[in-house]
Length: 345
Ligand code: SD4
Image (cartoon, rainbow, N blue to C red; front, side):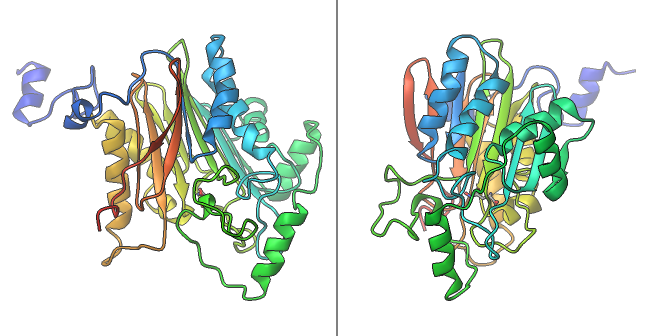
Protein backbone atom coordinates (compact mmCIF):
# COMPACT_ATOMS: atom_id res chain seq x y z
CA UNK A 1 0.00 0.00 0.00
CA UNK A 2 1.21 3.53 -0.79
CA UNK A 3 2.08 5.78 2.12
CA UNK A 4 -0.72 8.37 2.49
CA UNK A 5 1.48 11.24 1.35
CA UNK A 6 2.47 9.50 -1.93
CA UNK A 7 -1.13 8.60 -2.54
CA UNK A 8 -2.16 12.24 -2.24
CA UNK A 9 0.67 13.31 -4.53
CA UNK A 10 -0.53 10.84 -7.13
CA UNK A 11 -3.89 12.60 -7.00
CA UNK A 12 -2.17 15.96 -7.42
CA UNK A 13 -3.14 16.96 -3.90
CA UNK A 14 -0.94 18.33 -1.17
CA UNK A 15 -1.58 18.84 2.50
CA UNK A 16 -1.99 22.53 1.84
CA UNK A 17 -4.60 22.10 -0.92
CA UNK A 18 -6.53 19.90 1.45
CA UNK A 19 -6.18 22.39 4.26
CA UNK A 20 -4.06 19.96 6.29
CA UNK A 21 -0.81 20.61 8.09
CA UNK A 22 1.30 23.69 7.52
CA UNK A 23 -0.08 26.07 4.88
CA UNK A 24 1.98 26.49 1.77
CA UNK A 25 2.74 29.94 0.42
CA UNK A 26 0.54 31.34 -2.35
CA UNK A 27 1.75 33.93 -4.86
CA UNK A 28 -0.23 36.55 -2.96
CA UNK A 29 1.75 35.86 0.20
CA UNK A 30 4.87 37.24 -1.39
CA UNK A 31 2.95 40.00 -3.11
CA UNK A 32 1.86 41.66 0.06
CA UNK A 33 4.64 41.47 2.66
CA UNK A 34 3.58 44.79 4.20
CA UNK A 35 0.20 43.42 5.18
CA UNK A 36 1.39 41.42 8.15
CA UNK A 37 1.80 41.94 11.83
CA UNK A 38 3.96 39.86 14.15
CA UNK A 39 2.04 40.98 17.25
CA UNK A 40 -1.63 41.66 17.92
CA UNK A 41 -3.58 43.34 15.17
CA UNK A 42 -7.08 44.70 14.71
CA UNK A 43 -8.67 45.63 11.39
CA UNK A 44 -12.06 47.14 10.74
CA UNK A 45 -14.10 48.24 7.78
CA UNK A 46 -14.27 51.77 6.46
CA UNK A 47 -12.67 54.98 7.51
CA UNK A 48 -14.36 55.38 10.86
CA UNK A 49 -12.78 52.14 11.99
CA UNK A 50 -9.88 53.98 13.58
CA UNK A 51 -12.00 54.96 16.60
CA UNK A 52 -13.28 51.40 16.90
CA UNK A 53 -9.74 50.07 16.57
CA UNK A 54 -8.54 52.40 19.32
CA UNK A 55 -11.07 50.91 21.74
CA UNK A 56 -10.11 47.41 20.65
CA UNK A 57 -6.40 48.16 20.86
CA UNK A 58 -6.69 49.31 24.47
CA UNK A 59 -7.68 45.74 25.29
CA UNK A 60 -5.18 44.02 22.99
CA UNK A 61 -2.30 46.16 24.26
CA UNK A 62 -2.81 44.97 27.82
CA UNK A 63 -2.82 41.39 26.61
CA UNK A 64 -6.63 41.16 26.66
CA UNK A 65 -8.73 38.80 24.58
CA UNK A 66 -9.55 39.33 20.92
CA UNK A 67 -13.19 38.62 21.76
CA UNK A 68 -13.33 41.49 24.25
CA UNK A 69 -11.46 43.71 21.83
CA UNK A 70 -13.86 43.26 18.90
CA UNK A 71 -16.87 43.77 21.14
CA UNK A 72 -15.41 46.98 22.56
CA UNK A 73 -14.54 48.18 19.07
CA UNK A 74 -17.98 47.45 17.63
CA UNK A 75 -19.65 49.34 20.48
CA UNK A 76 -18.00 52.59 19.40
CA UNK A 77 -19.98 53.15 16.17
CA UNK A 78 -23.07 51.62 17.76
CA UNK A 79 -23.13 54.48 20.27
CA UNK A 80 -22.32 57.16 17.69
CA UNK A 81 -25.49 59.02 16.60
CA UNK A 82 -23.65 60.42 13.58
CA UNK A 83 -23.15 56.96 12.15
CA UNK A 84 -26.20 56.22 10.05
CA UNK A 85 -25.64 52.56 9.40
CA UNK A 86 -24.95 51.25 12.90
CA UNK A 87 -26.83 51.34 16.21
CA UNK A 88 -28.08 54.67 17.55
CA UNK A 89 -28.81 57.05 14.69
CA UNK A 90 -28.98 54.26 12.10
CA UNK A 91 -31.33 54.92 9.21
CA UNK A 92 -34.65 53.14 9.71
CA UNK A 93 -36.49 50.71 7.51
CA UNK A 94 -39.09 52.08 5.13
CA UNK A 95 -41.69 52.10 7.91
CA UNK A 96 -39.51 54.15 10.24
CA UNK A 97 -38.16 51.41 12.54
CA UNK A 98 -34.43 51.17 13.24
CA UNK A 99 -33.62 47.45 13.25
CA UNK A 100 -30.17 46.12 14.06
CA UNK A 101 -28.25 43.04 12.97
CA UNK A 102 -25.09 41.92 14.78
CA UNK A 103 -22.84 38.93 15.18
CA UNK A 104 -19.79 37.96 17.24
CA UNK A 105 -17.58 34.88 16.94
CA UNK A 106 -14.39 33.56 18.53
CA UNK A 107 -11.56 31.24 17.49
CA UNK A 108 -13.32 28.20 18.95
CA UNK A 109 -16.43 28.62 16.83
CA UNK A 110 -18.46 30.15 19.66
CA UNK A 111 -21.04 32.33 17.99
CA UNK A 112 -23.90 34.65 18.88
CA UNK A 113 -26.14 36.80 16.69
CA UNK A 114 -29.20 38.99 16.75
CA UNK A 115 -31.26 40.11 13.79
CA UNK A 116 -33.97 42.74 13.43
CA UNK A 117 -33.37 43.88 17.00
CA UNK A 118 -35.08 47.16 17.96
CA UNK A 119 -34.62 49.66 20.78
CA UNK A 120 -31.26 48.40 22.07
CA UNK A 121 -28.08 50.32 21.20
CA UNK A 122 -25.45 47.64 21.72
CA UNK A 123 -26.64 44.83 19.48
CA UNK A 124 -23.15 43.30 19.47
CA UNK A 125 -23.25 42.88 23.25
CA UNK A 126 -26.68 41.26 23.03
CA UNK A 127 -25.18 38.90 20.43
CA UNK A 128 -22.41 38.06 22.86
CA UNK A 129 -24.98 37.26 25.58
CA UNK A 130 -26.78 34.99 23.11
CA UNK A 131 -23.43 33.24 22.62
CA UNK A 132 -22.58 32.96 26.29
CA UNK A 133 -25.93 32.53 28.00
CA UNK A 134 -28.14 30.54 25.65
CA UNK A 135 -27.88 27.23 23.82
CA UNK A 136 -28.69 29.13 20.57
CA UNK A 137 -26.73 31.19 18.09
CA UNK A 138 -29.35 33.56 16.65
CA UNK A 139 -32.30 35.42 18.14
CA UNK A 140 -34.52 37.70 16.05
CA UNK A 141 -37.01 40.53 16.43
CA UNK A 142 -39.28 40.60 19.45
CA UNK A 143 -37.62 37.55 21.00
CA UNK A 144 -34.21 39.16 20.73
CA UNK A 145 -35.58 42.31 22.36
CA UNK A 146 -37.17 40.38 25.21
CA UNK A 147 -33.92 38.51 25.77
CA UNK A 148 -31.94 41.77 25.80
CA UNK A 149 -34.34 43.35 28.29
CA UNK A 150 -34.17 40.27 30.51
CA UNK A 151 -30.38 40.64 30.47
CA UNK A 152 -30.67 44.22 31.69
CA UNK A 153 -29.93 46.11 28.47
CA UNK A 154 -31.63 49.51 28.57
CA UNK A 155 -34.46 50.18 26.14
CA UNK A 156 -34.01 53.28 24.01
CA UNK A 157 -35.48 54.86 20.89
CA UNK A 158 -32.73 54.58 18.26
CA UNK A 159 -34.35 56.88 15.69
CA UNK A 160 -32.59 60.22 16.05
CA UNK A 161 -34.10 63.45 14.74
CA UNK A 162 -31.48 63.53 11.99
CA UNK A 163 -32.22 59.97 10.83
CA UNK A 164 -35.95 60.62 10.96
CA UNK A 165 -35.50 63.71 8.80
CA UNK A 166 -33.56 61.68 6.24
CA UNK A 167 -36.25 59.00 6.27
CA UNK A 168 -39.04 61.56 5.74
CA UNK A 169 -37.06 63.05 2.89
CA UNK A 170 -36.68 59.58 1.38
CA UNK A 171 -40.44 58.94 1.74
CA UNK A 172 -41.10 61.67 -0.84
CA UNK A 173 -39.89 59.31 -3.55
CA UNK A 174 -39.68 56.07 -1.55
CA UNK A 175 -37.25 54.71 -4.08
CA UNK A 176 -35.19 51.84 -2.71
CA UNK A 177 -31.88 51.92 -4.45
CA UNK A 178 -28.78 50.78 -2.58
CA UNK A 179 -25.80 52.86 -3.65
CA UNK A 180 -22.14 51.98 -3.62
CA UNK A 181 -20.18 53.49 -0.76
CA UNK A 182 -23.25 55.28 0.59
CA UNK A 183 -21.63 54.68 3.94
CA UNK A 184 -18.93 57.18 3.07
CA UNK A 185 -21.34 59.79 1.82
CA UNK A 186 -24.10 60.33 4.38
CA UNK A 187 -25.50 62.56 1.72
CA UNK A 188 -28.98 62.60 3.19
CA UNK A 189 -27.85 64.70 6.09
CA UNK A 190 -24.50 66.18 5.22
CA UNK A 191 -24.82 68.02 1.91
CA UNK A 192 -21.52 68.35 0.13
CA UNK A 193 -20.00 65.73 2.38
CA UNK A 194 -16.78 64.29 1.02
CA UNK A 195 -16.43 60.51 0.75
CA UNK A 196 -14.13 59.51 3.56
CA UNK A 197 -14.69 62.78 5.44
CA UNK A 198 -14.49 62.73 9.17
CA UNK A 199 -18.22 62.53 9.87
CA UNK A 200 -18.83 59.74 7.42
CA UNK A 201 -19.21 56.33 8.94
CA UNK A 202 -20.48 52.88 8.22
CA UNK A 203 -21.39 49.38 9.22
CA UNK A 204 -18.51 47.81 11.01
CA UNK A 205 -16.84 44.46 10.55
CA UNK A 206 -13.95 44.17 13.01
CA UNK A 207 -11.39 41.36 13.29
CA UNK A 208 -8.69 40.95 15.91
CA UNK A 209 -5.74 38.71 16.73
CA UNK A 210 -4.52 38.86 20.33
CA UNK A 211 -1.22 38.13 22.12
CA UNK A 212 -2.24 34.49 22.54
CA UNK A 213 -2.72 34.28 18.75
CA UNK A 214 -6.46 33.86 19.20
CA UNK A 215 -8.82 35.37 16.65
CA UNK A 216 -12.26 36.92 17.04
CA UNK A 217 -14.61 38.99 14.93
CA UNK A 218 -17.74 41.10 15.22
CA UNK A 219 -20.06 42.73 12.76
CA UNK A 220 -22.86 45.20 13.55
CA UNK A 221 -25.19 47.28 11.42
CA UNK A 222 -28.59 48.87 11.02
CA UNK A 223 -28.57 47.35 7.54
CA UNK A 224 -29.50 48.96 4.28
CA UNK A 225 -31.25 52.29 4.76
CA UNK A 226 -35.02 52.22 4.16
CA UNK A 227 -35.09 48.47 3.66
CA UNK A 228 -38.32 46.47 3.72
CA UNK A 229 -39.59 45.78 7.22
CA UNK A 230 -38.20 42.44 8.39
CA UNK A 231 -35.24 42.47 6.02
CA UNK A 232 -32.12 40.86 7.44
CA UNK A 233 -28.76 41.27 5.74
CA UNK A 234 -25.53 39.36 5.85
CA UNK A 235 -24.11 40.92 9.01
CA UNK A 236 -25.71 38.63 11.64
CA UNK A 237 -25.33 35.48 9.57
CA UNK A 238 -22.34 33.31 10.32
CA UNK A 239 -20.39 32.62 7.14
CA UNK A 240 -21.90 35.62 5.36
CA UNK A 241 -21.13 38.90 7.19
CA UNK A 242 -18.62 37.27 9.53
CA UNK A 243 -16.70 34.05 9.92
CA UNK A 244 -13.88 33.03 12.22
CA UNK A 245 -11.93 29.77 12.17
CA UNK A 246 -9.22 29.71 14.81
CA UNK A 247 -7.06 27.37 12.74
CA UNK A 248 -7.16 29.57 9.64
CA UNK A 249 -8.35 33.15 9.92
CA UNK A 250 -11.29 35.50 10.05
CA UNK A 251 -13.24 37.52 7.50
CA UNK A 252 -16.00 40.10 7.49
CA UNK A 253 -18.10 41.78 4.83
CA UNK A 254 -19.64 45.13 4.09
CA UNK A 255 -21.88 46.30 1.30
CA UNK A 256 -25.11 44.95 -0.14
CA UNK A 257 -25.76 42.01 2.13
CA UNK A 258 -27.90 40.11 -0.34
CA UNK A 259 -24.86 39.67 -2.58
CA UNK A 260 -22.77 38.35 0.29
CA UNK A 261 -25.49 35.97 1.49
CA UNK A 262 -25.69 34.32 -1.93
CA UNK A 263 -22.07 33.22 -1.80
CA UNK A 264 -21.62 32.78 1.99
CA UNK A 265 -18.96 35.43 1.49
CA UNK A 266 -16.92 35.42 4.71
CA UNK A 267 -16.89 31.64 4.88
CA UNK A 268 -15.67 31.57 1.30
CA UNK A 269 -12.84 33.95 2.17
CA UNK A 270 -11.76 31.84 5.15
CA UNK A 271 -11.93 28.61 3.15
CA UNK A 272 -9.78 30.18 0.43
CA UNK A 273 -7.22 31.14 3.06
CA UNK A 274 -7.37 27.55 4.33
CA UNK A 275 -6.39 26.48 0.84
CA UNK A 276 -3.36 28.76 0.96
CA UNK A 277 -4.56 32.04 -0.52
CA UNK A 278 -3.21 35.22 1.03
CA UNK A 279 -5.93 37.31 2.72
CA UNK A 280 -6.23 39.87 -0.07
CA UNK A 281 -6.33 37.19 -2.75
CA UNK A 282 -9.00 35.29 -0.83
CA UNK A 283 -11.13 38.45 -0.61
CA UNK A 284 -10.59 39.07 -4.33
CA UNK A 285 -11.80 35.61 -5.32
CA UNK A 286 -14.92 35.99 -3.19
CA UNK A 287 -15.64 39.32 -4.89
CA UNK A 288 -15.10 37.70 -8.30
CA UNK A 289 -17.64 35.04 -7.36
CA UNK A 290 -20.19 37.77 -6.61
CA UNK A 291 -19.39 39.69 -9.81
CA UNK A 292 -19.68 36.56 -11.97
CA UNK A 293 -23.47 36.52 -11.58
CA UNK A 294 -23.78 39.65 -13.66
CA UNK A 295 -23.16 39.65 -17.40
CA UNK A 296 -22.27 43.35 -17.28
CA UNK A 297 -20.32 44.97 -14.42
CA UNK A 298 -22.58 46.30 -11.64
CA UNK A 299 -21.30 49.78 -10.96
CA UNK A 300 -24.26 50.50 -8.72
CA UNK A 301 -23.49 48.12 -5.89
CA UNK A 302 -20.64 47.82 -3.50
CA UNK A 303 -19.41 44.72 -1.73
CA UNK A 304 -16.15 44.36 0.13
CA UNK A 305 -14.34 41.91 2.38
CA UNK A 306 -11.59 42.20 4.95
CA UNK A 307 -9.61 39.19 6.12
CA UNK A 308 -7.13 38.45 8.89
CA UNK A 309 -5.02 35.31 8.83
CA UNK A 310 -4.08 33.69 12.11
CA UNK A 311 -0.43 34.33 11.22
CA UNK A 312 -1.06 38.10 11.29
CA UNK A 313 -1.37 38.77 7.56
CA UNK A 314 -4.40 40.80 6.56
CA UNK A 315 -6.00 42.17 3.42
CA UNK A 316 -9.14 43.52 1.85
CA UNK A 317 -10.76 43.72 -1.56
CA UNK A 318 -13.85 45.45 -2.95
CA UNK A 319 -16.06 45.34 -5.99
CA UNK A 320 -15.93 49.11 -6.50
CA UNK A 321 -13.17 51.57 -5.74
CA UNK A 322 -13.74 53.63 -2.59
CA UNK A 323 -13.55 51.02 0.15
CA UNK A 324 -10.96 51.37 2.88
CA UNK A 325 -10.23 49.68 6.17
CA UNK A 326 -8.36 50.68 9.31
CA UNK A 327 -5.45 48.61 10.61
CA UNK A 328 -3.99 48.99 14.08
CA UNK A 329 -0.80 47.25 15.20
CA UNK A 330 1.93 48.06 17.72
CA UNK A 331 3.26 50.45 15.07
CA UNK A 332 0.09 52.54 15.16
CA UNK A 333 -3.01 52.95 13.04
CA UNK A 334 -3.29 53.36 9.30
CA UNK A 335 -6.01 53.49 6.72
CA UNK A 336 -5.64 51.07 3.79
CA UNK A 337 -7.43 51.74 0.52
CA UNK A 338 -8.50 48.33 -0.76
CA UNK A 339 -7.96 47.34 -4.38
CA UNK A 340 -11.14 46.73 -6.36
CA UNK A 341 -12.34 44.53 -9.19
CA UNK A 342 -13.95 47.34 -11.12
CA UNK A 343 -11.30 49.88 -10.22
CA UNK A 344 -9.58 49.64 -13.55
CA UNK A 345 -12.71 49.64 -15.76
C1 SD4 B 1 -26.34 44.80 5.11
N1 SD4 B 1 -24.00 44.45 4.77
O1 SD4 B 1 -27.22 44.87 5.95
C2 SD4 B 1 -24.96 45.25 5.49
C3 SD4 B 1 -24.85 46.71 5.21
C4 SD4 B 1 -23.48 47.20 5.06
O2 SD4 B 1 -22.06 48.81 4.43
O3 SD4 B 1 -22.51 46.54 5.24
N2 SD4 B 1 -23.30 48.41 4.65
O4 SD4 B 1 -26.54 44.42 3.96
